Length: 273
Image (cartoon, rainbow, N blue to C red):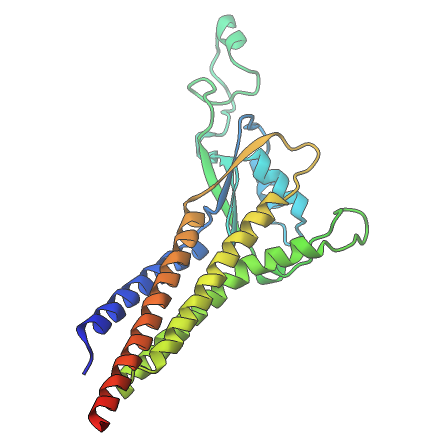
């Protein structure tokens, strides 16, 4: 027979664990961990060239970091995004353009080929995922100089920032299996292991957030990159919120397991006496 207090603790702990898992899963799959805001964005660059540079397989860190600073980019664990002018506003210049008066010609740039003046093109988000080899690629201290020395600190920060959330989710999944087995066996003893696994998962979530923040802080733009302001996004906060939720769930599971064991021991001792 399970006391109502212990059952309530298990239910609340399970709900907190589910919320933490959902938050962390959404955070891992989205790109709004960190975003840059540049006041001067060049809207006349060749969009095709920018796409090819951003999608290059043999990418270097300074290449995509420069684009992040130049193009109001956002960075996630598995995604990198930049703002590009939309090509839908442009149209092919006709063979026989209509005649315009001299005042209109002076008012519009020579390369303007749109019917309604030259308004600023609409910006759209272009995202590219990081491949697994790119995630494990070593980060050099001085890129572009033959075979530069590897920056061990930034390399392992980068690897930990995407591995630790996966480890955290795996630990929560393992704890769910242990809890399911405990329900089948009608035993409270495995609940202690469920609490420990949630504590470890919470530490992994916190470690992932810290590694990402440190890695972004150490991200070096190129010499020609403009001054861009950076701020954390909602995906970062979702991952950060999952840490206390997992810790609270682990604390409830541990309390329920230890309290139920003490109560069971006292009842057994009373029956023997």
